[in-house]
Figure 1 (spheres, rainbow, N blue to C red):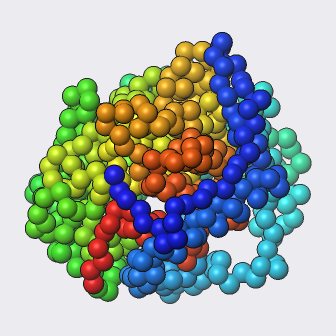
Figure 2 (cartoon, rainbow, N blue to C red):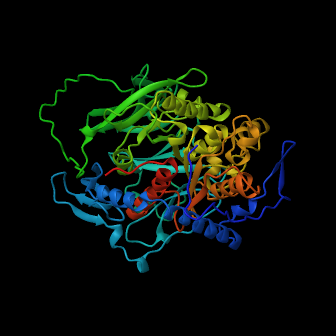
Figure 3 (tube, rainbow, N blue to C red):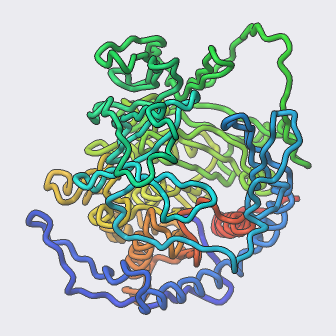
Length: 605
């Protein structure tokens, strides 16, 4: 296990009140919840708990020698111009751009791709005193869809749609490229299924301006079942092309005429192995299809001789030839082959000496693919770290079947896959348990919490971002009810028994008591959350933090648990989206400085 050498002796954890009277009956099973009071982020006692944890964590991070070096190097490498791909709306082109260290990206508009860009919206120039913000809601029910007229008061908005009989429904809308149809997408969970309604905008001679004062738009219910996922890609009058997983877990393209809704025709059938991730209509009569496939080497003869680079981003000091990227496959507990990407400096010796960062997610049909990361490049370059992405079940890497194999009653497959990835990295000489750090966020935070409970001996460090840790009560807060499609719900007896087996909050055990012949402790652990996260509310991390500190440390006079259990709690922040650049840099420096410290990684310039 990774060791920790605090500057001023063993950590003294803040004492959190335990309310032993809080016990809930789940289908005849009594489950204690002594830290339920931590569920109210606005309570003064909770604020004091957060304050004490922030103070403790800062004292730990102050002793991490690599912290300032990481901040300096990440900042320097982060300071390069970044551009998002341009997109077209109406007859204008738009793109986001950041000069390097701007707090937020700036939105630009052009008459054409070659036209002069003009700033449309610069969030960095907004003055705080002129800003207004919406208030948080704890229910996330009874959604409504409005249309807003620019330059008018919000009271003049048109209520386009609501469904008071289905409070959990959420809505999204888009307008077809020809401007004729307004499409309404309706979902009720995180499952890849939705309904589709449409409204013929040409029926309004004056456009939506003429619809003021009316009640709801006259949508036609085109697809009114949650039987599959449907995304409109293009249309030619009433003939629509949809991307769907209807009878096609790896997705396909189909066509249907709004006037003949019972006749569906496959235009691009489902592939045998590769997943059709997206489709895009271009040039009026062409389609670009994007497939997710295992890494292969192939030769493609394009018939576009005048292709050119539109924009190339360069990062000073970064040379991609210094690194090697490989995809490997390893067997999970049940024999299923699991893919993993491994990034390392070229020609490293597989002698188990390298710090290693293993990242995973495994849920909600979301695929993890390699991408450029400044902070991880710094780890590889200056700490000699190996970085790995495990494409475990529950994700969307191989389509809906891969997703279903890691959800509901089969959720344990995710943890088995991830643990098997760690075992592979150790057995092949990339690293050793005391030098292996695991990381994940949101559903990936759940993955980390469950993995350290099940195999505390296998890891030296754990970084869990905004994780779903209380699997018995997650559905009671904000949007949590939508996650029951992947997890199940403790209100149902069968599903309660799935959840209680792996819920991180309910499975913290003292490993030295469970395996006295092979005593070990939990890895050094950092739980990261934000006090205003309204997606995965902070109660998950706070309750687990209090539980781990009590069970493993403060409840014992001389605990074998010397590895630190700390929480990095961001104040006045949310789930992560939209964070200013400096906050992203600071958090990366903090978590990886902690990792470097507890893994005993050596800094090399």
